[in-house]
Amino acid sequence: MTVYVIDDHPLMRDAITMLVHRVRPGLKVVSVPKLNVLDSTVERQGAPELFCLDLKLPDTLGLSGLHAIKAKYPDVPLVIVTGSEASDYEATCLEAGADLFLEKASNPNIIIEGLRSLLPVDETVEASEEAAAAPTKLSKRQKQLILMLDQGLSNRDIAEKLSISEHTVKVHFWRLFRRLGVNSRTQALHFARTNGWLGI
Image (cartoon, rainbow, N blue to C red; front, side, top):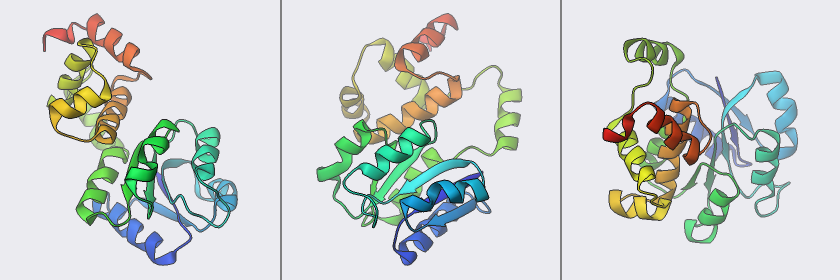
């Protein structure tokens, strides 16, 4: 499992690497200073499990870096970690395919929480959980999401009900979809109905 930290500032790359290792000690983290060397770096270092991307790189403009990565690696989770303010860029980044938006000025604990929500579960732990709770084990939060999906609530409605941000709602959905092996709200709801979960 490899996490790619794409940022042109060495100190920031080191800081994010340190936070990743606080979430998952021993996880392979590869630093990338510019977007135009990402593909060759991936070829050498291995398939990505997560991208941490700064919006402002020497060879990007606006959201061009985000668009380029999602076009090349559409199924790999991507978190924006940037000095830009959320009020200016968060909504457009999430609409463009980012899974999470974090400001560099955020409290480290907030960044850690965000990274933890997107980092892959350890395969040995995941396998033991699945064996103990086949076919699928949902958290309390995921059960809430299933019920709210059935009510037809939007991300904003769900965020208000749970007193969390909309991007956190999106992260929860990403983890739910990954757990169920589906790609959309419709598929998740169908899965829930098929398995009789709407009474949970």
